[in-house]
Length: 286
Ligand SMILES: Nc1ncnc2c1ncn2[C@@H]1O[C@H](COP(=O)(O)OP(=O)(O)O)[C@@H](O)[C@H]1O
Ligand SMILES: [Mg+2]
Image (cartoon, rainbow, N blue to C red):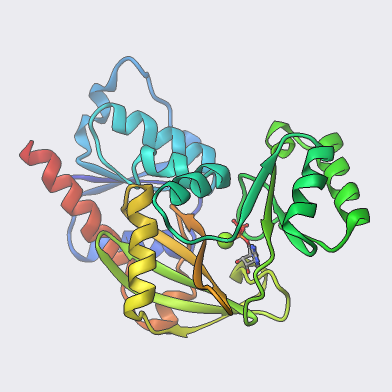
């Protein structure tokens, strides 16, 4: 049984994963994505892996690595089919909507002019986000028509093709925090609040974490969101709406957990390795 780990940089997340693999004497190999070269027509080399944990910093490297391993029958944490949904906010919203998972009202438009109209249908203030992104980058609050026109024109003129897809969302009047729940298989293992003065509550932007009890309700909505995208090792971001209760904001397929582990004492790296071992076991039994 051999586990591969595709990674870009040794952040604490990866250090903890390798420490766990070493401590348990699990045969494993580090695959640095910058050195990764594959002959796509000759997968023989890579058959030595029974499962691969994908930890690339770059969403595209992670996705394409998962894609090739999965096409050779090697399971990945997470699979390409899951990453391909989570990486794209339009895909995620559509898949969650089809599964009946509650979310903020979200609109898509293709031109600055139609984006302005979509925003007026949502009502000011509303939120505009890049369809691919993380750490709260370029997530913008639009308070009025002037801001809308400015942001949409800038996206149109300066952005790449992904910026030409306008993704707009109603602003949820959340209580100065959001919730991140960590799902591994059918368990909602732990959750944290992320508090900030600013309305963007990513820890990468300075939000402070505190423990959030995983209630039945949080478990239920987190599992529903995880199952909708195909399940695996996922971080589900929830917004608390004063009237509607929990809404799913997004599903992350390669999450960070450097704040959550010391805060809660929950051994997420160990659980991720367990999940990979389960997938590897299923593969070898096939
Ligand atoms: N519709 C919204 N209403 C209120 N706050 C939001 C909304 N969308 C995002 N946020 C805030 O912005 C943060 C970043 O947005 P998110 O969609 O998670 O983007 P990213 O993928 O960059 O993390 C969220 O954690 C939340 O605090
Ligand atoms: Mg987020």
